[in-house]
Length: 354
Image (tube, rainbow, N blue to C red):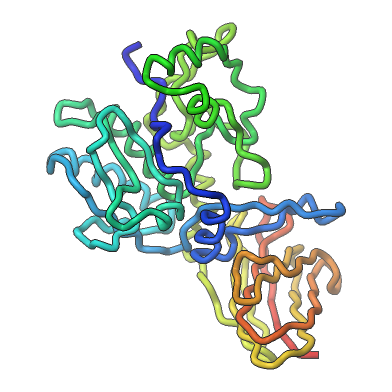
């Protein structure tokens, strides 16, 4: 095979779920959400993402490597700024969130989103193990776009919940092929066959053109099924990441107890607005939305963005939301999104004592 069917090494550091979840929600409140389809059921599905705060400046530092190779990686990585509302700043900052190495030859990998914050500041969060001065530009584009997709929070497309049953893997051949590259059966399961659960990630319908999709040669599947090594971000990649990091997004806003309602709009499908407020006196508080949009309201806290205290859909007037809770002193957060992930609209949110 001329082209590597894998992109990521199985040796990227695996972070304990509890640690990873906590770091993620400290970065961004809506890294914990309630699945919209669950509001009519007995329980809620909690989605846990690894997204950076919208509008974040991410510092990138090269730990080693050839300057020519570094410059090519930087140029391709910067393309993500045109897709997501994030800034990548390359420099020598010792506190850089993304730290790139070329030391592990033959292996390329990246931490997923905020998992990079769980790595010791002296260690790499990303590695490019087969990029050299004489490497072709197609391979640079394929690998750099893919690994920086991981760094911004994207998962492997072939491991998306939507990929279940789509790829007719010939499992014995897959195990044998990757064994030849030093992968154990557990490595293959973790990086190829295991699908993320519905409650662990944002995802779209399966997209074989995604930059996050591994190349799949026909020799590793049953029947006639193959996917070439994608080098470009697909239209769905661009749309999806634009939703996760919307331009003009308001970021975290302060909500004042007994203050005026804040008028806002969900200008992009999939957008989530987040609000912070502080309770100084114990009591009963009323959080509600008004307006024409059918929104979903979540309350997080106290003093823990990852704890979902309450959620509501349609307990307010019309299609609006209303949460009434006795709250103790502490910090709290509200997140608001449209009940239809493809819809947009206006609303207002308020916080009053009862």
